[in-house]
Figure 1 (cartoon, rainbow, N blue to C red):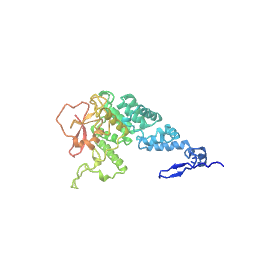
Figure 2 (cartoon, rainbow, N blue to C red):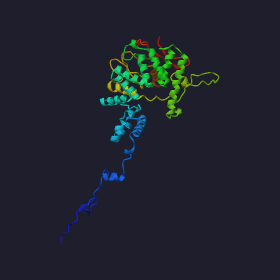
Figure 3 (tube, rainbow, N blue to C red):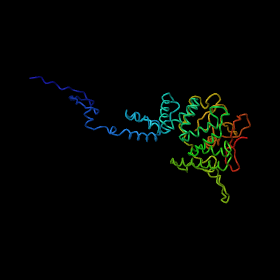
Length: 375
């Protein structure tokens, strides 16, 4: 008779000994037997063109780069389809919002790949980066022009600012008529800054025959679009909408300048969301040189702009305080409404003039602040 083999005793966590049991063999969920029992993966049964269509929708509505990166990390098939040229051409501005502190050669190649795929937002963003940050003026301007030809409003307006200032060249390279034409095209597409810039150009006769009433109409249209954009975002008007000046108790007296839409600087709405390209410019110079791009050059004082000077005394300076400077009348008007109105105070005459057509902020008899050219 064969001897009985004693059961193996195992010490349990509860402090007693229990007989050991034979471990059962587990079948992996990834084994062919399990896959045959569970059936094929549903994603594999969806045609590629349908997946690409879904990814295009996701790319156009992405709120941050992580939304698109997560798709690339899901599986090999989605990673391959997400880099399809059709998907890359639909990426939203926020999906390609690369941070300046994370700029690298791989980020540069990714934007270039999106440009090759036909993304207008990538053309504009990479064009701004190359023109202002990498100082590749010709290539940056050509990328913005590529987007502008396809009616990309921010690219049209940026080219207009370059023409107004003669950026990348000398003072003699200014082309005011070309700047007004580009600005008019962007304004036709509903760009708020272009509408405001064109309105001030018409009021001041800057690059175009003076027409005060027509300029006023463009300013009102810019303010109306600005107000509509904020209201469509879901914010309640009671928390921020105020009149530009107190109401006059006498109802028999006609007054139109108390209406925010009729003010040159519009409603007291919250600051508009900064475009990722402008945010990149501001962060680029903040990381590398503080508030000064170097060599005595200045940044536009409007926090949502980020454009630097490409030569000394390129931007217009406020002749009231002589402290701030702007790349455009639109930036000056917006910064006045958001910040500079509280800080601007007259100073004694100094030698801060640069001879390049500075503009100043003056008050008229109605109490409105308007932009007028210096004599």
